[in-house]
Image (cartoon, rainbow, N blue to C red; front, top):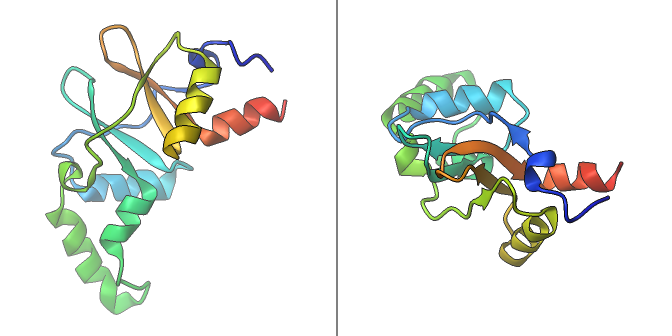
Length: 139
């Protein structure tokens, strides 16, 4: 296990992302159809402007159950919200060449579960999660 390796060596490349004006229905589909827990929100230049965690998204739906009578209200609520209204705006990012050791430090100190990874121009290229770190340790 090389903690001095660049985060680009263990990150998930080409992560799912949405725009600030994407409807919450798009996030719903991403969370339901993929095994992901964080979706970066990016602008037209692919710069990270926020992140939506699955827990933030589920908080939006709090109070709704899986009963058939609630599905209509849940769908209406999802259509009413945009990603920019749900996202956390202050997002720590990492550069592709920063080390895994630095990522571990940031994750631990801030209790983050994910860090979007950007190139030198600030465009999203990947995402590093605590699961990626665990996979590295488990090799």
